[in-house]
Length: 163
Image: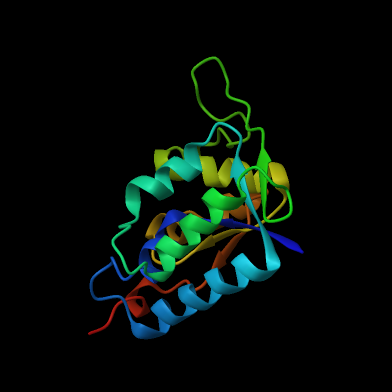
């Protein structure tokens, strides 16, 4: 089973909570989450910041959409390493993720996404993104610092949304 790191926006798009997202992108997110649930180990941080972000962001109305089903899967398996693996992400004295690079090119990288980037760097696993432009805007600096990104909807944000 391969390991995956999934930015919250992937589940939000699959949950149909992002208006005007292109159908191809919604389909890619839905398919990725289905495969992740069935065939991969989902990486989360031991301090529960990623899971908590998922819970805050996802609408859990019934019937559950695919993003909500993903969160239910995470909740059901978060204490068993077969489907979910918790990774320790150390923080520095200022409370910042020690594995997030302190380079000028990433100084403006979204604070809420740094946990995913730090996890990706620590685990050596790409972060999967759907429609968060911060990943595309900072891709060269992320890659140069050992953080890979899997773009489900491509790197061209003009193609992420329907006309």
